[in-house]
Image (cartoon, rainbow, N blue to C red; front, side):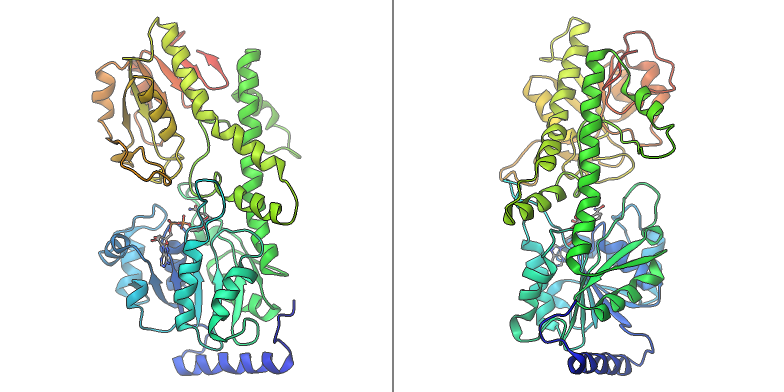
Length: 464
Ligand SMILES: NC(=O)c1ccc[n+]([C@@H]2O[C@H](COP(=O)([O-])OP(=O)(O)OC[C@H]3O[C@@H](n4cnc5c(N)ncnc54)[C@H](O)[C@@H]3O)[C@@H](O)[C@H]2O)c1
C-alpha cells in the first residue's frame, strides 16, 4: 500500500537513512538497537527473545516496581525464567529504563503497552497514546515503529500515526510504521519463540523490515498487506475464542437441564477429525485479552455503522457464568440442608487460568464477592497468588483483599463447600477429593478421581 509522501525518491532516501543508521552503529545488521516499550506479558518475552537473537535491546517501562524487579534479575512473567533474564542483562544486550531516563536512541521501537477498555467497555487508547508521545520525542528519520498491543483496525494508521507525525516526520516517507500482533498464551508451556507471527506495514518495505526483526525469534512470519489487516486478524482470533467459549458455556447450561455431561459430549464431538475444535466451559473468561479485545472490534464496527451481535451475546453469556457458579454453590449447600449465609467456602485457584499468576478480570473475583455478599465465609488457596484483591480495574475505592490460606490446613478445617475455579497443576488434588465433603467443580478437575456419590457437583455435569 502507498502512504502519503511515498514514492521512488522518498523510498530511496529512507533506505539511505537506514543504511547510515547501520553504519553509525557499526553493526552490519539493520536495526541493531531495538527498544521495547512496556515490559509485561508481551513485552518482556519479546525483549529477551530479541536480546537473545543478537539485538541490543532497550526495555522501557513506566512501572518502577517492574524495573526494580528486572534490574534485580527477577522475572515476574512466568514464561521468562530468571536465568534468561539474568543472562540478557549480564551480557549487556538488555537494559531497562523508565520512559523519562531513556537517553539512547534505537532505530526500531516495539510498543507493547496495555489496551484496556473503560468501565463502559469502550477502547482506552491512553497507554498507546502515552507511549507514542515518548516515541515521537526520540523519533528520527529512518526509524521503524511497530505496534504490538492488540487493538482495533485503524489504530496504527490512525491515532498512532497522527501522534508520531505531530513534529513533522511523515510515516512511510520519513519513518516506517507497522503492526505485528502478539499471540503469546502464558502458562501453556509455549515459548513466545515457538509462535508464528503476522506483520502488516504501511509499505511493503516497512513490512519486510519488521518481519526481518521478528523472523529470528519466530518459527514463521506471515506478511499481510496492511496494519489494519494484521490488527483485525488478531482481534478475530480472540473474538473466535470468546464466541466459542460462550457457545460451550451455553451447552453446559443445556446439559445441566438435560441431565447430560457436557464434558463427555465435548469428548465425543472431539473425535471428529475435521471441522470441529473443542472448547471447554468454565466459571467465566478472564485475563487481559478474551474479555476485553472483542469490545475493540465492536466499537470499531459501530463507527462504520455495523452493530456486532456475536460479541455482545458472547460477552453476556460469559459474564454471567460467575453468577451461575454461585447458583451451583447455593444448590450444593442446599442439598446438605445448608444456607450460603454462614457457610464456610474454600475457593481453589483465583488466577484467571491454570498455571499463571495473572488475576486480571479473573472470574474468581465476582464469585468470591458474590458469596461474601450472600453472607458466606470465604477463603481461598492459590499457590501463585499469595494475595487477591476484590477490586477490579475500574473500582475507584478500596476493596477487601484476601490472603491465600494453606490448602491442607483449610481442608482439615472441614469447609462446608470447596469451589474449584482454577485447577493449577501441582496441587494435591487427591487430598482435595479424599477430604472435601462437598465440592463444586467448574473445570472438570475431578475427572479421574475416586469420588463419593453426592460429593461433587460439576458445572455442566451434575452430581458424582
Ligand atoms: N497477556 C497476554 O497474554 C497477551 C497476549 C497477546 C496480546 N496481548 C496484548 O499485548 C498488550 C500488552 O499486554 P500485556 O499483557 O503485556 O500487558 P501488561 O500490563 O502485562 O504489560 C504492559 C506494561 O506496559 C507498561 N506501560 C504502560 N504504559 C506505558 C508507557 N506509556 N510507557 C512505558 N511502559 C508503559 C506497564 O507498566 C506494564 O508493565 C495488550 O494490548 C494485550 O491485549 C496480551
